[in-house]
Image (tube, rainbow, N blue to C red; front, side, top):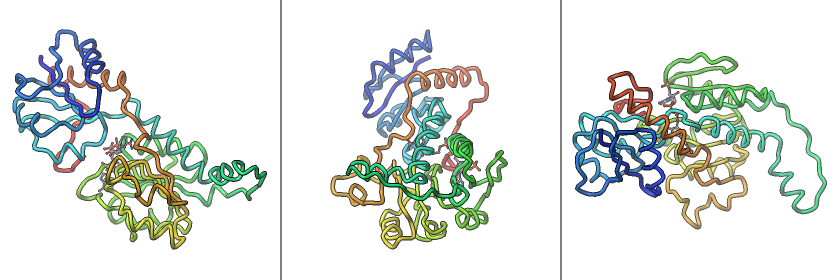
Amino acid sequence: MRILFCATNTKAEPWIAALRAALPGAEVEEWQPGARQADHAVVWAPPQQMLDEQPALQGIFNMGAGVDALLKLRLPPGAKLVRLDDAGMSVQMAEFVCHAVIRHFRELDVYEKDTAEGKWSFRRPRLRSEYPVGIMGLGVLGARVAQAVAHFEFPVLGWSRSPKQLAGVRCYSGEEGLQEFLAATRVLVCLLPLTADTEDILNRRTLGQLMSGGYLINVARGGHLVEEELIALLDDGHLAGATLDVFRTEPLPAGHPFWTHPKITVTPHTSARTLRDETIAQIAGKIHALERGEPVAGVVDPERGY
Ligand SMILES: NC(=O)c1ccc[n+]([C@@H]2O[C@H](COP(=O)([O-])OP(=O)(O)OC[C@H]3O[C@@H](n4cnc5c(N)ncnc54)[C@H](OP(=O)(O)O)[C@@H]3O)[C@@H](O)[C@H]2O)c1
């Protein structure tokens, strides 16, 4: 079995060494133009040339959960595209989102500013019941986040494409459930995949339906958000703030208004990082399953876009 590794902006050696250790007997190499045909590829943002040169690939294993960038490329016709599912990301996402929800709800950002100025000030406690948290996307990450937020006794709502039942989460689905979901949400968390149906979904119309004083946490993709419409809703007071981890252009360009907006907290696409050991173990397991003709979790449906 021959495996190519091709990941942009990633130091290849430790990954290749770990893949060789996890798949003894497999030939694992970093992709170079003109490389011999391989059976599988482990990739992150590969160049089109790599995919064009490898028509015999059976499996393309993405080193992340989101496949929106990969699906924009021409893929070898017989290859299954397989995403990471969880691999240590859902607990990171849960801690990041809980932190952002609690920081806003407990006004810790305001306390940080006050104490930095030497001010000993108290703010009136807020009512948890008035801060329902709505999670868009109840997949691997969204379901874990919903569970974690519910642990802090916030009312939790969720929205997905197909109907779901999750303990402690009021679930809505489809276009028909969106309006009711948004109207009952104060803190909105986006954990949708970026697809033709979800691009620009965080816009003036949808964010405008949130409870007044709403708060946005976008940890999915920058393409979900219409940036200038968020700024307008923050500036007219309908929204109280936003924590944004993902952006249309990354790194977020110098001079972008998000950097300095007083109601926006920026983090550099760090909410759930790919962890090497967990990722290698999961991909090795998936490669074994695919080789044995067994079902593989996390196979992407290109029609659906996730
Ligand atoms: N910021 C970061 O560091 C980071 C890290 C990892 C992932 N991400 C992002 O997080 C996304 C979600 O990851 P995941 O592993 O949870 O994905 P997933 O398991 O595929 O779950 C996607 C969820 O979104 C729902 N959905 C998809 N299209 C929809 C639509 N048109 N309307 C309503 N709901 C829709 C799905 O509904 P069904 O359940 O009905 O299918 C599912 O519940 C990834 O695609 C990636 O972009 C970001």
